[in-house]
Image (cartoon, rainbow, N blue to C red; front, top):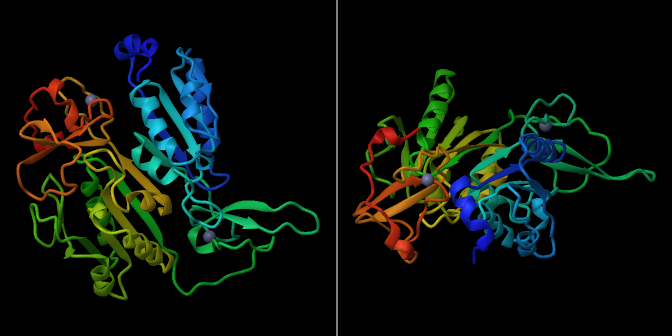
Length: 387
Ligand SMILES: [Zn+2]
Ligand SMILES: [Zn+2]
């Protein structure tokens, strides 16, 4: 339950948020964390470093009532309970939580709760200022490579691109490796509804089209709003797309000469999408994926956490909160309303057509059916609400 000490002034004073910094070794995650805490201290805000790897719930018990910003480093070392604890610190205790960690371990496997945290965060940044450590490579470093220690020297960890990463530890020196195909990449565009994901996807596809690259775009067949066989945003922007029932159908329809592969509404595909897009990126394709990262109950949606972890670049978009009078530009939740009321927790995950409407909400105004009583009538929503 909410501690009475926190409730009163925090309700009036401020709202909490969750910021997540991830990236490979030497990408500057901890520096970003420190920069945020230093800024808070300059502003006279009370901040606290919290650490309790044995039990994430102990983070809450360490919380000083005066604290306004909490820093948590090495998020990958916690278990999945950290997801609920971080949300509770931001939503219930209303502190700003800044969390840093590896989203992939040295073998490039998802690390601890970090993939889900990239989805539940209000702001998530995959740091990409690192360039691959392989001499001559100019790709973005998004993986951590482990090197054997030799003759008593300790093992080393360096940031490398997906092309130059091996799950096994490597010898200390880089050997020259030549590849027939140019290097590929995986970009993820994520956010809640009305955050402009599809618009951003179409903008990038237009750029690729102007550059003369061969493009193929896909979307799940169940999403039949606005256009058949086109990726379409709420603002009527369109890009030709192939509607497919599943991931195998994408694989079958891909042409050999396609350089750019786009996938919209990725949350509706199965987890086998992750393997396909990672493989395509490794084989030199530029893959751009857009999707809804949280479902209407604010739970990570389908393959989105793993896509966030494996992505070389993550673009997380926010919308404006549509709750009457809120005005926050930090909406990251999608509210499903049925007859103007929040949908209950036992409603089906996917509703195509029908009476449900959707709004973008910030974490403080996202509601689940149980708290029907304090829900005001929804305001009319125009397309212009989209950022
Ligand atoms: Zn490289
Ligand atoms: Zn709000």
